[in-house]
Length: 382
Image (cartoon, rainbow, N blue to C red; front, side, top):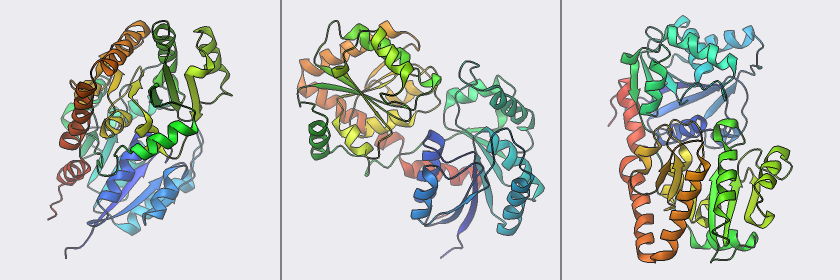
C-alpha cells in the first residue's frame, strides 16, 4: 500500500459556512489515502469537534480579530516544519495570506489557495477583509502554485481586482448523494412536530443572518406572495434566524406576514429532517460563489428558486427558477409559478424532483471533487 499523502489544511475558522463544509467533506473523503491535519486560525466552532470525532487532527491557533498573534504565527511555522506536508491547502482570504506566507517561509513548495467568496461587495464585506484580499491579489502570482475556486463567477470577480488569472483552477463543490436523501419518515416527523399538514406547501431557506444572504429580499417577496397564496409556510434556519431577532421581526411585520406563515428555527442539528420536509427551497442572496445549500436541497429532490448569483445558474440548470438579485417582486412571481406547477401536475413535479437529484449525483459528486483536488495538487493515487 502506498504511503499516505500528508496534507495540512489551513482555514480561517471552523464555523458553519460553505468553505468549512467543503473542507470537512474533502478530508473525510480522502481519509483512506491522505493524512489530513486541519489548522484553524480562530477556533474550533462547529466543525472542529466533528472533524475530531472522525479521527482528523485539529489544531486551533486562537487568533483574535484585528489582534496580531506572533506566537500563533510561530506555532504555524513550527507545525509545518515538523509535519513536512506534501501539500498545504488554504481556505479563505486570511488563511490564504497567513498560511501562504508562513508555508513559503517553512519551505513548502506545494501551496494552494482556496477562494470560496463570490465577490467583495462593500455593502456586505468588511474593510479589513477587503484589505486582506487585496494583499492576496498582489501575492497571487508567486505564493500559491494554484488557486482553487469553487465557482467560475468567483474567478471573474477576483481577477477583476488583481488576482492572476493564470493561477486559477475551478473545482466545483462535491456532495455525497448517498447521505443526502429525502426521508418520508423524517418529513412526517418534522411536519408533525411543527404543526404542518402534509397539504401545506413548505418553502425553506437555510442561511445565516447576514446582509449578503438578503433575507429582507425573501421577506418582501413573501409579503407579495401571500396576497395570492395562503396555504404556504416559510421555514427559516440558520444562525440568527430566531424570534428574538428584532430586525427580522420588524421586516416580517412591515410586510404584514402572519406569524403562522413563517417559522424562525435558528440553527438546527437535523438538516436531513429540514430538507426532507420541504416542497421548495429558496436562496435570496445578493452574492454567492457556489452555494452548498442549493446542491444539498437538490440532492434531497427539492426544486429551488434562487437569485442569479455566482454559479447558481450552472447548478440549477433547468430544474428550478432563477431571478435577479434584490428583486422581491420577481422572486415572488417565481414562487407563485412554482406553487402553480406543484399543484397542477404531480407526475411532472415528481419528474422535476428526480431531475434535481440526478443533476447533483452526475455533475457534483464528492468523488469528482476529491479527484480534482488530487490532480491539482499533482498527486496520482490508484
